[in-house]
Length: 415
Image 1: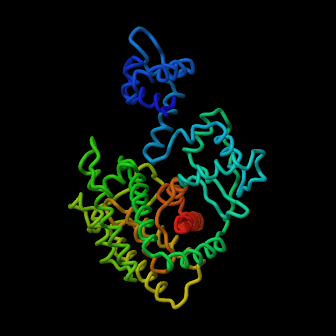
Image 2: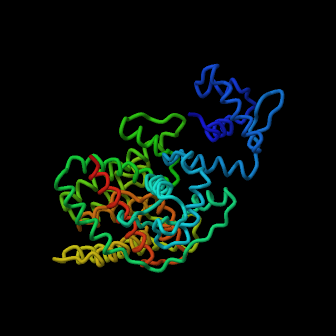
Image 3: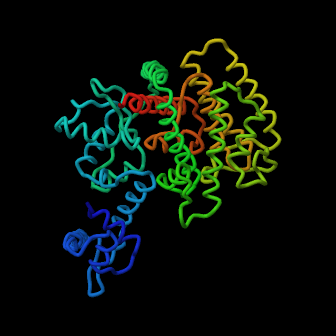
């Protein structure tokens, strides 16, 4: 069924006067369905999204209408049904949930069916993290997309202040469940984790400005269908990152430790579309675009700092036992230290994420993706930070791991 937001998105992209029958044709509607489309166009006109004259209907450009399209476009890029989120009842729920560090059904004066519907919609898109099912306890991490969605419906955004919470007990419970489920159905685990690998490729490269949407990333990597109207380098960037990740996963499964050579190889595989820098330590100064406060190592410091970091890595991973708390603290340090060294001209952040995932995997803490709802907070804890804060990154890593385990476990329990 075509909605008013479907029609608005089409009209916004076309940006030319269109008759109702042209719009109906675009949605492959028969003449009998013409009236339905016409009613939607009239409704959009009455709401100030469109204008109407003798030439037909035309989208009106305004801050509100631009924001509407930005929300829709973000949803399309991330394989979200925008009709699910452009719902005032859901938005009120999100706004109230922002005020809770953790919430349950008792925090809302809505029916349990509506409460569960809201939870399932947001969880499906990685915008909500469930801590427990019985009783249901969850959080909605704040990000600017959800903030804009709340503002779009005219609500003031207020967010609870978070302390440095720890989620070790939650992670331990899910890890135990995960290992039991995987032992019973290894093939299903491999199939499910492959889907999350593709999501990670999209999320990771979207941070770096790659324009390919999640639906097109899936088509490219699963069905080998190259998206139209995209430059060759963007397509190759996605394909190359998959090669690098596949190599990392294989190495982690074989418990092959990281070393300088392995890291250079991951970078080489990921950056083959830029052969002049792929797998090569930089020889010139670089900076983080848009963040002048982020100071990276000087060229003459790189080798020494890399040796020091890898020595610490070897010492840590060679320990006979690792408490979960120690693992996550070291992962946050390792991630930030490598990113601050910034050994390459480009591709540092994607390589940092990849080798951090490797570190966690060989220490039996599986991580597959950075959920959409945590992506922005992750960036602000790493290369978007004004000041290095390993404790803050540690907290985000904990939430990433917990969210991964929760979603993977639920998938593995499905019949």
